[in-house]
Length: 209
Image (cartoon, rainbow, N blue to C red; front, side, top):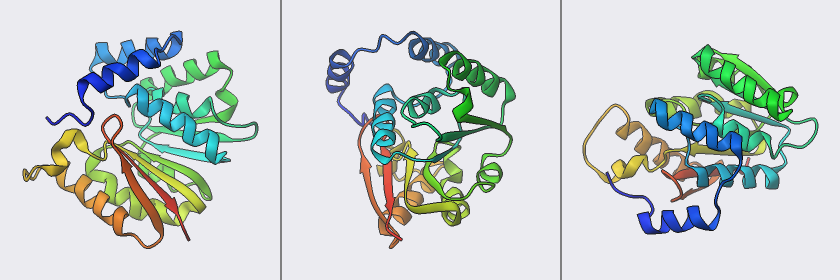
């Protein structure tokens, strides 16, 4: 595995911006105990900032787990805005629903159990689409969701550098689709795209048309 960020820099960032929020810390501990993948804390901060800047009315997340990334986003939503969480495991969404209720954010969220790609296509005029589902589905997610994005939407995808495996020649179920997704987005005429080497790599694309 290739470190996206030097471990010393990662430690510096964690000490520079220590997290004291009990709910976020509890969710991080839960993920660690379960060996459950969640976004990096710095990615969470980044998503929160992007949401503040974009001021979306509708956010759709493909692959929500138990709501860690969605909570970072939801906390930045303005009144009247909402986020749609999609997850195949009801127990994960039940946990997320409890956290959002405690936060007073439940009214800003929809909790949808099932196939994320199918559920996502039920929404139109999406201002922010956050993709964090099975990596082999990333190209399919772009094709399926493109017609549902609002003008000037942000498309954001986690794990764009896939633990450094994007520079390896090994062809696996996830490596090639992630690389293909990055290449498509980087050359897509309808988007201005960049990849930020934070966490496991975050692809951000602004819809131009």
